[in-house]
Image 1 (cartoon, rainbow, N blue to C red):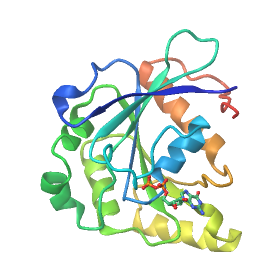
Image 2 (image 1 turned 90 degrees about the vertical axis):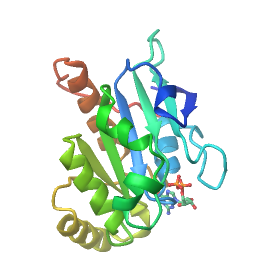
Image 3 (image 1 turned 30 degrees about the vertical axis):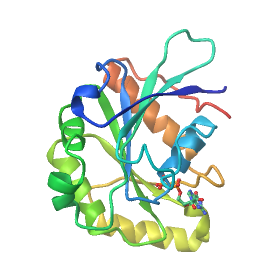
Length: 211
Ligand code: GDP
């Protein structure tokens, strides 16, 4: 099954957020972690622009997703600005645009945060602080270990173990936009979180949409 997706809008201020309606899945991570590639791999087309393209990088970009044959869109992906390599505590309060924190704290339809970390490098203080922030505000999150194709199976196991020690509060899912590894499991988690958010009974078996 294909997924129909389209760019809805870019918000640079909380007053511009669309009225909350569908469940939203937020994508967060340091610049260059592979965020655009994950979004594009999930929807099967170049929906999110890479961070090298200026303009949309300091905004929250809203994308609407619909399943073919269904008249209504099902969920929204939100692409949040990549954060830098500096400490997030300061960024969250000052250098990160000030509409990010209200989005994460107050958005009623935010069903799941996907926090992307590169499995090839140790967790950074900014990643740890973001997870502590999400824990503090009780937002459900999953950590994606991106670019898993760059490691052998052994190296990946070790990398996941180290990341697990650095981020003890996290469930870490390895993912490769290049090979598609982890895509089906990620879709399963997204469907589970958005269904739970809608208050639906969980389906017995969730199919990942196929490209
Ligand atoms: P963003 O800045 O977080 O949106 O990151 P991009 O999606 O633009 O990716 C940053 C760089 O990492 C690009 O050069 C991508 O080709 C590379 N990259 C992204 N995902 C993968 C992956 O799964 N495997 C590998 N090997 N490289 C990746």
